[in-house]
Length: 235
Image (cartoon, rainbow, N blue to C red):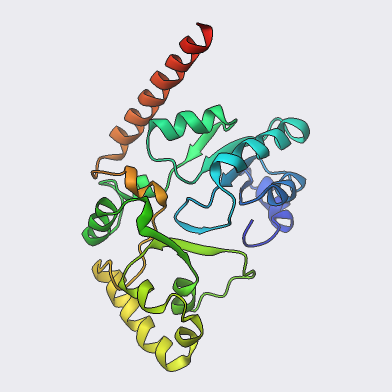
């Protein structure tokens, strides 16, 4: 919902036979998505890499689940932000989600089209190594329609250089120099002088694996955890 209401696109999407999927960062956003006829709502917590709001996955997902149960029970709910293993999947399902959207964990997969330097940066990071900032949008000259969202990414030399100095970075001469450095670093995988979008789940990522194995392990672990939880409840 960070780009505005989907209502003006909803009819066209439906006519094409596609599912209307809306990513939301608040309950207010979820209500707008429901009114637009969303088939799938992704409730994204602030733990996620990239642009996000300030609500956390742990509280946003069940609140949106309660909303949908009352007004749109057929709408699927997907949790995003902080999910990187079977524990996260099991937790999301217990909170009321029908599934999860995985970001950072899949970036650290063999099939991901990212430079080796980005993989190395994710593996070396923990959940404390990220920061929410506006400097990435400023250096790229990306003008979002709202100031509500910031980017979560690796705290690196580029961000340390400019975070808190946003006005200086927006100055044309500085922006021109940094923009060129940023894109050169991005293309070569220099993780210190560009952005590496990663969420707080980075601390749960310890190796780069094939996507198939990642998903199989995640589903198996979640199933085991939920089965164990059911046995404890029964006792």
